[in-house]
Length: 241
Image 1 (cartoon, rainbow, N blue to C red):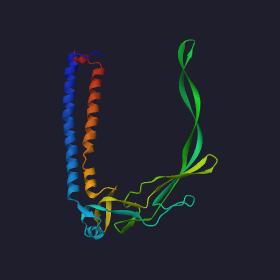
Image 2: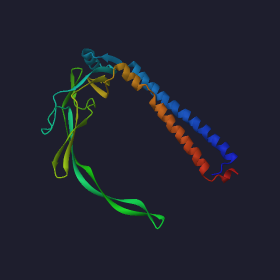
Image 3: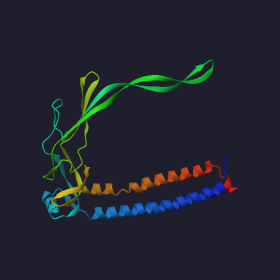
Image 4: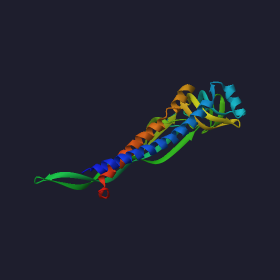
């Protein structure tokens, strides 16, 4: 690929334009982040104080960072696995045979040729799923319906064979977590909740203000600029002559 002097000059113009647009877009992202950070910095901070938490909900205090324990009230499980969990998912899988066409190479009389053949393989495929969870959760001694705070991550428990080429795989969540809740406190309840496990209030705020969005944008924008310039060099640019 031959690159002419005019193409180099025009590619510099492309880079400059992309840089200008990138600065404009990143400025918009930065303004949005600053507004979000202002919301974080003006939010009420409640450190393991259930009475202040209740007062905030009762008086429509608004956005708040609240540190405390998130727990399930009671527990659930399946009889065949026992234990106590806030939620459990049972995935039923069948060991299924599949076929696929693969391309291979071989040497015949000193020449390499390609050919296709049908290959058989087996996988465990999901055929059914069931989920159970507690009806009530508790945060800082206040009870809420399950789902009000969307945080009970499930991890693998066990696998049980249930028949020929059948098995059940179980995943469950713990009963208790500790961390910081960011939520809107109003109308004697909480909404727009996000829970940050094993983080103090200060650690949560630092985590939320890392500006990773700007870093991700510039990585994407620089890659896009390089692709545009390469594409410009690749196409026929006789109109520049």
